[in-house]
Structures are given as C-alpha cells and as structure tokens.
Image (tube, rainbow, N blue to C red):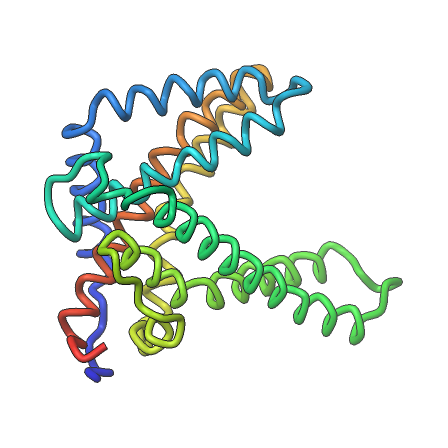
Length: 237
C-alpha cells in the first residue's frame, strides 16, 4: 500500500468542478428536472407536506449521485442499468451506506459534547464554550465520515469495497478528504445566507433546494476523483 501518496487538494477540486460542469452539460434534461423538482420542494417546504417532499427529494438525489460517480470513474454514462444496477439494489445499498456513515459520524459527535459537558458543567456553558463545542463537533463528524465515504463511489462499479478497505484507502489523506467537501459547501452556505437576508423565507427555501443538486454533483465528483487517484496508487486494495 502506497501510504506516501497525497491527494493534490486544489487540483482535485479543479477536476471535480470540471467534471461537475461536464455532468450538467451532458445531462441537461436530468439537471433541469432536478432543478424543477427543487423549486417545487422549496415552495412547499413550509407546508404540511414539506417534510415528506424533502425526504423524497433527498432519496431521488441518489441516482444523480450514482450518475456523477459513473461519469468520473467510467466515462460518459446514463441513468440506465449500468449506472443504477439491476433493480433497486445498488440505490438501496448506496442509501444504506450513506445512513451508516451519517450514524457513525453523529454518534462520534456525542464524544466532544459529553467531554465538554463534564469538564465545564451546564452552568458555565457560554458563547465561547458553545463555539468551541460546535467546532469540535463539526471536526469530529467530518473526520469520521471522510474515509468511509470512499466506499460510495465504488458502488457504481458494481463491486463496492469493504469498510475496512475504504478506511485503509484513505490513510494519510484524511485532511484532504475533509477539506474537499468542506470547501465545496462553503460557497453554497454563503449564497444561502445572503439569500436569506435578501428574500422571503419561501424563496430562500427554493434557492437552497436548487443548490442541493449542485452540491451533490460537486461532492460526488470530488469523492470519485479522490477514489480514482487512491485506487491507482493502491491497486492491491
């Protein structure tokens, strides 16, 4: 195993952006459908069906994620059996993996919360402690989720690597795997915050939902770019 290989973060982000643009241009109808669905979900976010629609929209984003992985790892692809697999198995597996990664990251966040609560006590919890706690929680969650997330791109190839393989594959590149998705999310968060200040809440929900597919494509492209580099550097895994 080549532990010395380091993902070039800035170059990988550039390649991820280029792949994201390629995915959008090759699949304009698909992209337009997700944007239109995002507008509807955003407009109805505050209604009684808002929660259900957001859940459905999130689940419907799995094919987009698989399509992005396929474009990067296999070349020009389509929403067909080669990308989505025979039957729902590949999409269900991708969903389960995503949930497991989220659960592991969420449970790990309890550690800094418990430690700080024990050390400081509820009475001394102030804005300073809250900021430190928030930073620690975000850091722990990002670190715990970073290397297992390398399993996700492998699903589109029909032979997903194991959790232990994904963990070993990311060895020595945790920082890059954390910073990549973080740097992708920062511009999205900034745009959302600006929009919330300028437009009514309903329209800001629409903007957030429309930006979600873009963030998914960029993040999945980055994971695929990182996965491809690390697999070439470690073919034995």
